[in-house]
Image 1 (tube, helix red, strand yellow):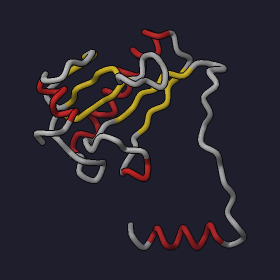
Image 2 (cartoon, one colour; image 1 turned 180 degrees about the vertical axis):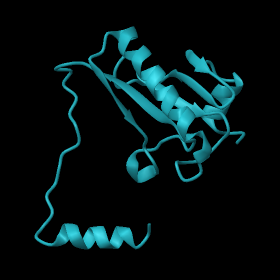
Image 3 (spheres, rainbow, N blue to C red; image 1 turned 120 degrees about the vertical axis):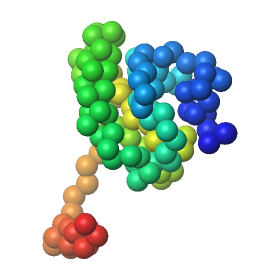
Image 4 (cartoon, rainbow, N blue to C red; image 1 turned 30 degrees about the vertical axis):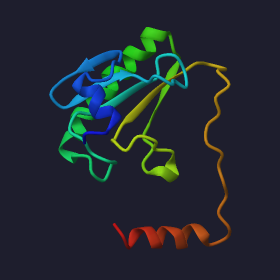
Length: 135
């Protein structure tokens, strides 16, 4: 897409700190990191979200996550990393081009995991049945 920020970054129209590139993916540092070393893995072919992402790239994506995650951890001396995707505006997706986050984590870095909630009696089974009918 002509107005997509990530497409412009991939084309070199907007500068980025490129970490890795191949025929299918472009990997670069996020300009507004949660932690130093926060990295984005972006498919070169524009896709809006995970539903639009070419599933045949899944194995390659996992390989890039492993390689990049390990490099990020070593590069910033992190103790671990979070891997994630914000899919849709309600989930926090700001740029409508599929992108995956690697966020380095450090012991006692102050970042919190998602809060958990509890199901009411019988609610889990009902929710499960509603989801299963769409699989």
